[in-house]
Image (cartoon, rainbow, N blue to C red; front, side):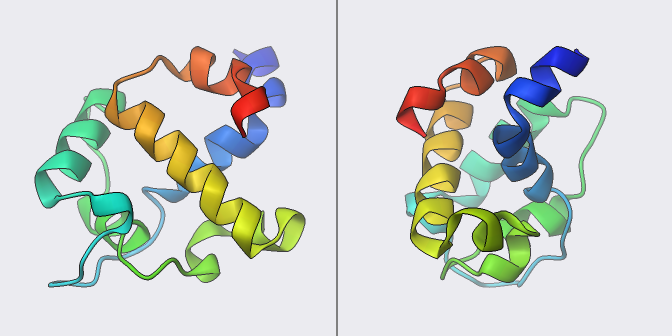
Length: 107
């Protein structure tokens, strides 16, 4: 697992960020996501529970670099947005985390 974390640190940073901040009620969500999409995706990856408020804030539109820790500082806002989008789309399809981490050519 530790080698997986080293290889896919940006991917895991994005996924972790999805559950680390509070939600804004009534917001629209990034990438056309719905509440149902976000909830189903997060429950798939975190079956023992997740911080629902944090996930919804993370996915609230417009994209806000402050919700993603150092990601924007490290790669720039445009690239960070694209990374989050790619990870979200793969996660929505329930792609295994190790496959998301390995597929760095798309990120």
